Image (cartoon, rainbow, N blue to C red; front, side):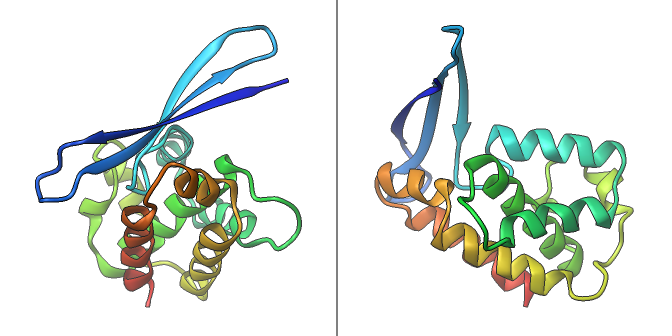
Length: 164
């Protein structure tokens, strides 16, 4: 049995609104506690950061496509790790499409930048994945349970803008 404890943390922002992030504590069957975090950015969580690190070691559009296909799939429940990676993959497609590489994590950016422009209909697949993540995923549920999900939704909308 895996137990999750989710906490909403409000910290001062640079503007008039507080800035929220979600911290997660997982208690494994062996009783060990692990900690992770979600924040509004596409790479501001452990799953997306880990996946980006792996991708940067051997960048391929096939890996990005696989992540997007998993996020866009309409069968079954969309777990938080799959949803987080799908958002990160969509952000990569948007960054490469627009040339706004500053949206990518600094470590690994130059490797991923060598991918060049995204092929074919990958932007459309990324839009599908973002829609599924926002409408029907554990990640969306966690943001809704944690308080105001509008900063996270604004991040998704920003990625969408880069995909269009």
